[in-house]
Structure formats: structure tokens, C-alpha cells
Image (cartoon, rainbow, N blue to C red):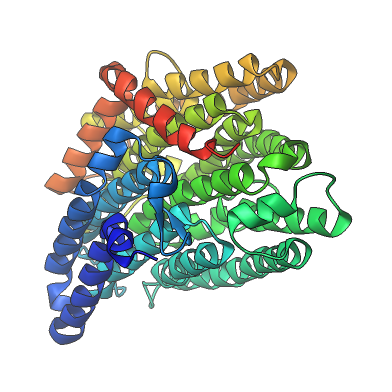
Length: 492
């Protein structure tokens, strides 16, 4: 084992590990009064880690040279693309966090805690290991590092009962999902004799036995929980509503990227020889998520719960690309993920800007009635984001759905694509409801508070990305996604 090359390949993880340990000591010595500079230091660590990804992304790292630590990790272009999205999402969520935590509205303990940024850093480190995993042991290590940090983040407002409830629900259901996944891995180990992806894949070649099939199903069920896909979505609305909004924004973006990327790596690199065994599971999950996410959002009045159902709906579209089971489908999935991260970050940033002068945050449709009259900039930003989430042209959200549907149709899954397209029309209803309430209802003038510079900058950047200007990014995005998807199919 060449440790020098392994350390060179995992430079990003080493930077995050070192920064996490240093910031943890800083947290212990300085306390909560240093929370903001610690958050900014974490942002710098993410930028530094992200900078190390650029050469591999540009060159399209593939092959045996990407293996680290005896094959436990694979730092290929697919992992690099996923890490870049994770780090960008984490940076955005860290930048808007101080404006939320440091505005104590209702006498609750909402000051920013110093360990918040450290938990985000270690969660992202776990995600880095997840997307680079080439063995079920390293996969589970990354998954648990991410999950343990996420449980604490969800309940970080200790005096807020909603936050405590969200953390408890997330912990209980997350532990159940981890157990299901681990049981599936143990079955695969028992029937194939290994935990490394290549060894398990070799053991699954040919006719799939009943025991191995159960292992495959349990692993897929555990991964479906992590991406909040139907029927393992039940935790999402409650956790999204109860967790602090910056944490909800984080959950909706970075872990979603990591879980989808991990799922793609497992199904293509481990179960690649048994496509028909897992494809029907993914197809059902994709359609069920699209339909249930759309229908579940219709009756919601709380904006965070609505966006939770929206995330379930979007996961369904992402899984369409996975169900195609070829390189074009995987590339379309990665393109969709990039655009989805921009749309979600922008949407939750806009929600963070819905505040009173005293710092009270507003989360319902009744609170944003007539927002176009009282706060037109926020209203127009939300309009762009909601229309993009609905897939209305010429916004970039339309392009994300187009590339996925194109890959699905080209693979011959026309009926599958037709059902998904028809179901996507349902989702337009609740996105357009935002526009109706903000532009046509009588103004209530509740949103009177000022937003920080970071909020305005992030809202402007995400709105620009999903606007027609964002189409200028599509050639580079398509190229990077194609290289990343190609790395998954190197052994197929």
C-alpha cells in the first residue's frame, strides 16, 4: 500500500479533518462568543478542500490510480464532482447561519453555538467518505460520521421543542435505517465472502440467490431512507419543519447529494451485473416519490414542510436518471443534482429573509401574503426559484427535467417517462401558489426585518444560476457530469 499516494488522493479529507480538529479546540477554549469566526474559518477550509478537487475534475480522474488505502476509497471524477457539490452547499449554509442564530426573536435560546460549524464540517467529511467509498466498511464509516453530526445539528436549539423533536425523530428513524443497511451488508458478505465492491460484484454475477437478493433489497431500503425516497420518506416533513432553517437547508442539499451519489455508486459498481433486480425497485421508488411528493405538498401551509415534500418530489426525478442504468442517465442525474442544489439553497435563503424587525421568522403562506408589494426583491426571487422548481422554461429547472426525461426516453422507457411527465404537472400547482399569495393576495406587511449581506448575495447568485443566464454553464456542467458518470461505468 502506497501511503504517500493515498494521502495525496485524500487531500480534501485531510484538510477537513485537520480543520475540524483545530476548530474543535478553538470551540472548547473560546466558547460561543467565537461562533461566527469559527463558521468563517470552516468556510475557508471548505474552499481549500474544494480547490484540491479542481485538477482531478478537469482531467476526469479514473482507473486504478484513483484507489487509496488498499482500495477502501476511490477518488475518481464521480467522487470529486459529488464532493464539489457537497462543499458548495455547506459553504452556502454556513454563510447564512449567523443571521439566523444571532437574531433572538422570542426569548428562546437561539444564539449561534460554536460547535455548529464544526458539526457541519464533520458531517461533510462523512459525506466525502461516503461518495468515495469502494468498500462497505468505508461506506458505513462515512455514513455514520455524517449521521451522528446530523442528529445533533437537527436538535441544536436545545430550548426549542420543535428542534428537539426533529432531532429525536431523525435519530430514531436514522438508526433504524442504518440497521437495515448494515443487515443488508452482512447478508451480502455472507453470500459473497467479501465487503469490497469488486468482490461483492463478482459474487453476484450469474443467477441471484434468494439470500443475496434479500441483501440487495435491504441495502436499497437503507439507502432510500437516506435520500428520503418513498416509502422511506416519513421523517422528512417533520425534520425539515422542526430543525433550524439553516440546518434544514443543509439537509436538503449536501446530504442529499451524498446519499444519491452513494446510491448510484452502489447500484452501478456493486449491483451492476444485476440491473433488472434493482431497476424495478428504483422505478417504483422514483414514480412513487414524484407522485407522493407532489400530492403531499398541495395541502401544506407551512413553507418548510412544503419544501420537504418538494425535495421528495425532486428525488423522484433524480432517480429517473438512475433507473435508466446507463452513462447518459447517470450524467443527467448529476446535472439535475447541481441545479437542484442551487434551487434549494436559494429557496431556503429566501425563507430565512422572511423576518420581522424583532427577528421573528415567518414560515406560512399567510405570512407572505402581498409580499410583492412590501418586499418585492424577495418576492421576485421566490418567484424565480419556485418557477424553476416547477420546471417552467426558460429557467434552468426546466433544463434539469429535460435532460433526465431525454435520457429516459432514449433508453426506451417511454411509458415510464410519460407517467413521470404527467405527474410533474401536479407539482406546478403548489409552486404557483407561492406566486398567487405573494402577488395577488392582500398585503399583511409582516416581513419588515432587514436581511444580512450574505443572504442577499446567496439569493442573487442562486437566482442568476437558475435564470436563463445559467444556460451558459450547461456546456461545462454537461462535460463534467459526463466525465463523472463515465467513472462509474469503467468496470461495467
